[in-house]
Image (cartoon, rainbow, N blue to C red; front, side, top):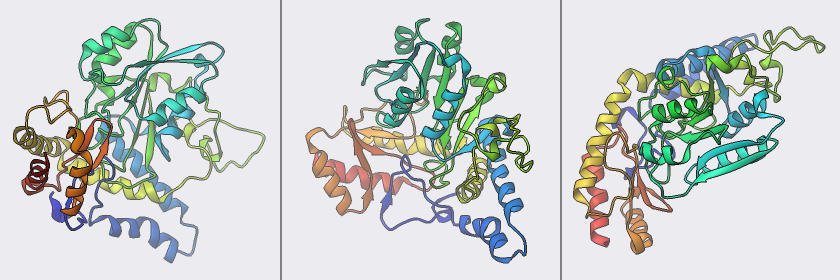
Length: 370
């Protein structure tokens, strides 16, 4: 798998932390699974459409070492987190103390603040190194009921030691929510090994699946206790029972589904998940690290603010150009090199469709400015 397998724009694209490129095989798959049944069949296309969504759950299960029954499609992470929080009886009727980081994606903090009846959010201060376990050990105590962990922190490039955090949290009887939006497709994720309570993700970034294909995974141990409030006929054990007097929650994570589902995003994403998994996430990560290492070696000391060790870094390098930010962004844009910037610097995310030439072009522009 290489650049020829993807629709690539002119110039250099290094924004996989935002939106991954579309596979060239995706339109044909989408036409066959979504468009064709709608265009040509003399019956409603729901059977084939729903099969496409189930393929999405199955693809996630293979990719993330889980069971398809524990996944439920969601439009985005905020929706999934809201539904899970509101479904947990143990999180109602008392004050819930949550540990998270100021470097988490803001949407997650908004949901935690609003979806729980009585909540106290406690933050690991921005800038603390969440890629090392000592940071978590200094903050995570029996004081907390929930801990929210981003496997990858999008603004810092840190990779959190999720398995160790979950183990520590369980010692304190603390439930764990993990955000894998920035890691799925570039880092190995093993849900069975992690044993978190809830995992949230999406496919628009490294998985190259497009927007709208989010998901929630709920641990087998806690699924039976979940009683979602935001439900619909597809949350029902038998959606086609059509008895308004009787609701029986689906015995799988589909109890979180809701009303009539969107179809197109999941059909599109299922294809890309399968293609990338077959190529091998370990191969994508190896290629990514090779390009990141070239970046680390070529730029001046102190220019990289993200970790430079495999177990602590994400797929994204954060390049700190200090007061030269605007000049760098201007020159990169002039050279057709697509990156973006956040609080700690420029974000650079080389995927399998990038090569050494892309990195050298980026390096040359940065050196010419700073």
